[in-house]
Image 1 (cartoon, one colour):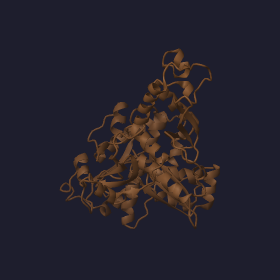
Image 2 (cartoon, one colour):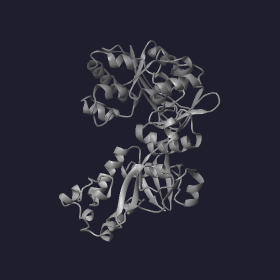
Image 3 (tube, one colour):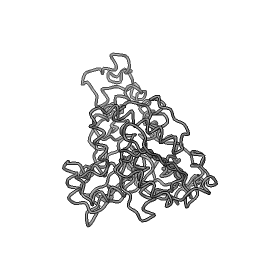
Image 4 (cartoon, rainbow, N blue to C red):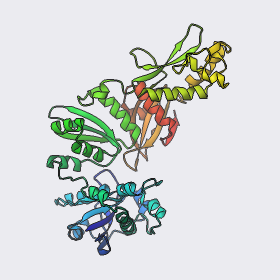
Length: 452
């Protein structure tokens, strides 16, 4: 038996949201046998962006029941059911939070139609409910209202059950996050962690033993506590507690992770006792005055144009530079060790390998390469998503150096350096940090650049 749920909330900070509307359909795999739909009067105001999204206003809820008045009905209609929702961890967390406020421990197994859809219908452009059901020919009305979204999820779930002929995937997801082989201590730890992007810290009784980042903190921690890998078993044998910091986006998770691993040196982060990016491309001037590019393992006190997490990526980047700037292969680590390079044979090298192009002309193109490996502006902030709808994040680059990151509310202006510095979480500028930020900018994952 399944209880297919959709919830609308007030919005706000994590675990401070309250329900404004709920729809539950009790489903026996063939048909809906019971339903419960209600607006709910919260004890806090609805965030403006939520009003714009759902159309639900505080005025609409004035005469609606409060959550404690419908709590018994929710327990009854979900009794003996697996909770099904599109992004089930959100709906389940909200329900548990509301019940905790009443002093009741609400527990159900959960099943997420987002994850099931990715497994059973791979390759779609989007798995957001609206686009997903439209792509599958499932009608949806009253988008972002509980009843409309829940009904669409019922139809989607029917289709997924049909596609899961062997029931292998379905059964594995039914176990959800509460697998029988997880110690009760682990279940309590997992329940407290959100399914958001961020950095997590695993402690033994004395100190941090592991730091990691993930796009889904709950899922990643769950893996550590259920996997049979050697590192996972070490964590399971030593873990005492876990804490986490949400970052809102991938860039800040990467920056925070690498900075704090270097500062704390957790004993189970063995890989980070070495360079995060152990391979670099270094500039060397040969006896004839030509600039050469050498791929090598990072050496202390040497300066590198760019650093990489492995040699293959470094050589691929070097090959791109050769093609983009008409460089000579024989003046790089991709040399064929012959009198002329392969690029010269196909007229893409101007002859630096056989002295037909002078060093001055050749090095001029190299300078253009160096120029493009710098940030476009000397001082700017890069704006990206924050930890909530009402918040944005920023990374400060000052005089080409990465200074740190921070967050600000949408109604605040932070375009002055003084305000930015006041909010800044400082990080050390190094080749690892530069590579992380530069690659993120190259992929254009950020929202906005503001020159200062």
